[in-house]
Length: 300
Image (cartoon, rainbow, N blue to C red; front, side, top):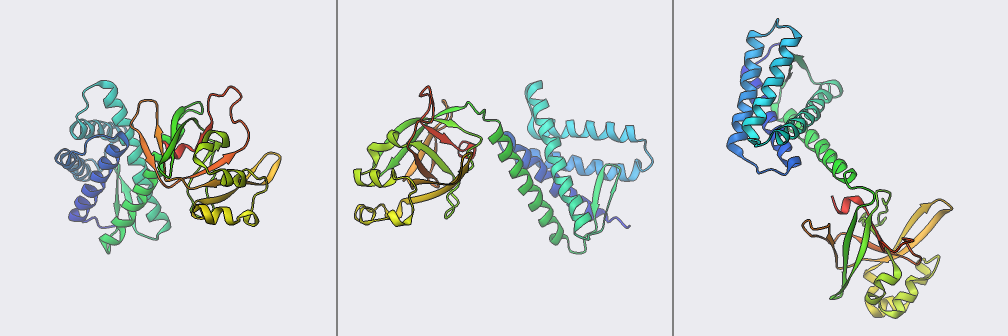
């Protein structure tokens, strides 16, 4: 297979830069374009030199060269001040690199595209460069985004408590909430995540007639009466199906708040508007430590 130097340089420069950019997103570090360009260029230079001078090098030498290269790129691109910061950045850089390399390899294996892997680099046979670099970058960024989301959600312990503010019609209440990794409920219509709240904790926000309506068991569309129309709650009203042990076809009544605010133990407060609040007529916590259950994605 013929390898064109200009394509090799462009391909590696773009992908190296995207890898550094994705690494910075995960670490929430400042995006330094000049440093990233220098780091990406060093990676390209190594690829070209290895292709020319290391075609018959031992595997151990190639691995050592790659390890040294990655440490140099991380040091230049991110300029970590402490050893711990350097190690964390380096590990993140490796993970992101594997994700992007997997995306390119998938295009070769599944997309019928020619390519070759040699001496630690990958070269794609581009008849139409944009047709391949775009999907490679898109797949890589998508997988990396899913990876970030998964890590951030799972990093929240199941006993993570936050303060939750629920706002509606100019009023609001604060309630203690638990970040529950088992809460994956969503509104079937909008797809919004669901917050489960003890009905008594938000009773002051709901008109009396609506409160009585929402507290009915087995609530369905047949219960939507004039109370909803008269109060203007018809647009807020929701019914969310759920399934649990001992309850195969449960229904939770709820409403669409104006917004919720999450105070994550001194971290930056987060406002969320695309959410549904469902009411639970029993006590969620035996020791009254919390009155609401949040999905991890709401605090990620």
